[in-house]
Amino acid sequence: MVVRADLCTTGGALHGGALMAFADTLGAVGTFQNLSEGAHTTTNDSTTKFMCSVPMGSTVIGECVPFHRGRTTMVWQTLVKSDAGKLCAVVTQTQLVLVPKGDAR
Image (tube, rainbow, N blue to C red):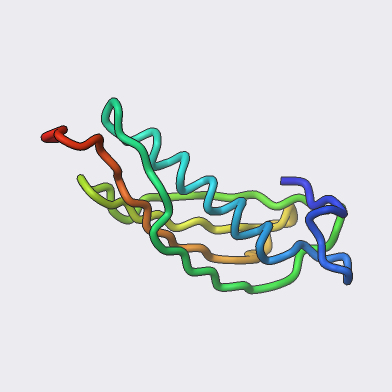
């Protein structure tokens, strides 16, 4: 994700909320790709550990891996790094797996 001005604080650094939304999207996509037909997902819990700021104009890269892919929840960890390879944040999130009522999956 390119760090644009509209994603930054007044100090010109990537806003923590934008970074968290980036990581949340990656975990949601990972969950979505593992859902059975007709199921949906939503974030239940997310924890972010910030390591360093990211200046405007740089790029962040997210690597998201599953810790748990269960029937009712999935847990993902996303490492967000700068384009120079520096670790900027670690995000761990739990996604709920939502199945339609009456579906016996």
